[in-house]
Length: 181
Image (tube, rainbow, N blue to C red; front, side):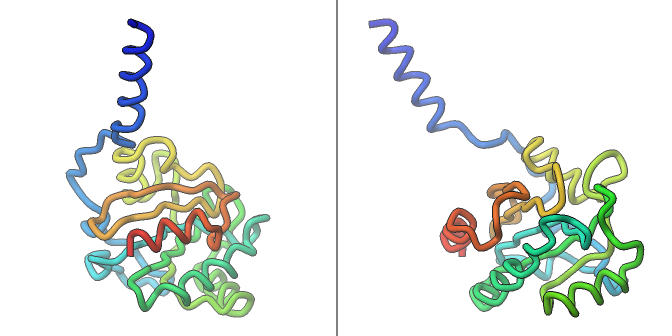
């Protein structure tokens, strides 16, 4: 009987637990970040939208994911999805200048979703947005490589994270986005 009770208790804990015990002193929409053209992006302008924030790089094996990110943006932007590309040289695979990244994305992938300036995404020098993600969602929010994805819900809280291997147009990501929109 004790084993059965313990088993039921463990199952209940597994299904009822929160993904992260976050207090969210701040939410995603409380931050600002520079755009690829150098202007400030006040993330408040994305309130009540679902955001897929992706750290990107021009010289990465996953760079072809730009195609899927653009398709995802085109498919769901009218429903309230924002794809936010965050070029980063944290893994030593990005161009040196924002203008070069912008040109690369436009010429090779016709990117027109919002992009930030080249930004640190891990470690002590990471942008405060990525420090916030780690604080509130844990290690799975820290990019392990380029094209790591963080999904933010309409309340400005992290809903889920996806590794570089998860393609932007995967059923996993699309179904989650659809459920949040």
